[in-house]
Image (cartoon, rainbow, N blue to C red):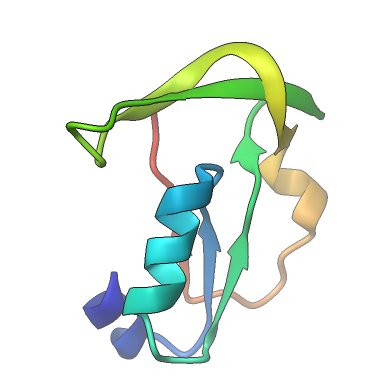
Length: 88
């Protein structure tokens, strides 16, 4: 992600997994991004996230309600060069 942020003027990034968000901030030194700590979905609500210690690139929605979920349209973006989303 570090190199992608350097290619664009304004990046909106979505990362619902706390540890992944921490690593994103640690590894991306640019300041031209906004990191949203929410999941994206059809409607507003809460979901659980299942993660795997042996595979940090693997996570998916699960039972629970520990992560806020919002629809992408609710952000009202007007001028964005890149939106970073991990899709399940």
